[in-house]
Image (cartoon, rainbow, N blue to C red; front, side, top):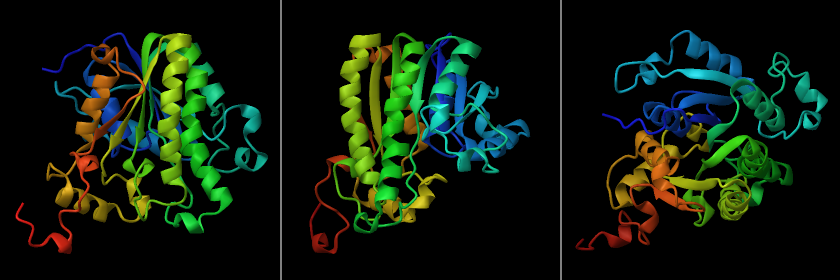
Length: 302
């Protein structure tokens, strides 16, 4: 039986666009524990996501341990590239993928959430985007690099600065990161490795600032590779998964649920003294200094 230690808590998860990635799994784990769920979905995919949810296309993925279906209280349009309404350029406002939506900047969404539900207790940053992710760093343009930093790193700062004031004391924030922040991962390009490094540095500084200012905690999970729809944009996710299975201490494929369970712990009162941490949930791959499937180790006895 899943413990219900988050009953009465309200969670806002930013960055869910389907039922396939870490964000969905984290949301489901929080719901299993009794949290009330609010979601921010990237504006261009909002209608597709809402329609799929309402028409039952996610029903199998929504099943909780007791047989009931996960309920999302409300789905908000959210484009975390924009802090305020005045930041949205005219060509975006009139774009057909945005024209039917409004109030999707971070400041506006925070205000809507407070108006609709009052203060929240949990904030999850499950956002990453780099338009040139398939480019090597040497071939990444300034525009592409800054876009990756904006959507994948600064978006956390903006979310925390706008949602922090509407979070209850002792609330918790979680972000997702990747080992490319500290190690070279060829193929993980377009400035994403830089964005993850910045994200982790910001988490440490934010831990101090929001702990002192609002008595909030913030941590990140550095997850191993997962074959989500978003990860397929990298173009090498299958190789990354195969490499992990061959070289990690635990030779198995990582599941989204394993990351979600660790996330729920960090967001619960059980982790009340944990903040500013980067927690690895990657079958131990981060601890390895040798590629055990290397041809040069073919005769290694272990």
